[in-house]
Length: 260
Image (cartoon, rainbow, N blue to C red; front, side, top):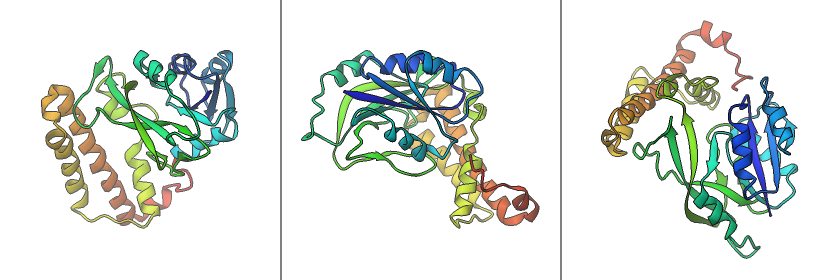
């Protein structure tokens, strides 16, 4: 038996499809909501999910909140914009989730822009560990880009779908996302510092990594756009960090207690 773990904030457009997808393999669904103002909570409850209200604590910490509320030891964690494919449903149903098996399972993720599957720029196979035994594994208690920490992880050769962006414009301005600002705050709090060359060097490195080394050049306009977006995000992260160091007025106005 498997429990589903989903964290949400204003995911009314996604939550129903996500829950229905997970209910193919899960008989217990826990949604940890961080203050949605749309119909996310009502939709989730109407589909039988247990909704836990928790102000956002950061990625890994928030995902671990559900572990106090799930019914089963095995937990499947998806984001609201992710779905199981038919092959993934079959693969999970065939697993023997016993105590003598691996601590967790990893599977491939197809990252999408609109209906387009992006295979370059490091976006595929993009293995993610999302099915795990909570007695032996859990997400790292970090605020950004958390991963499941497990000693024994077995890969499953099947995919989940990740509807990352509705269009390429959202690569630069997806509502509710400010990754560069969040990252700059976290770096500043950790004592990291930038110099005048840092924004350019890190931005260029991120662009070249995506476009050349991760073969974005083979992905046409989508590959180039993703590489530019990655470079811009990295540039802004270090530019904002440098601004905190150089401008006391900006630093004083920033609320570091509200990274999220």
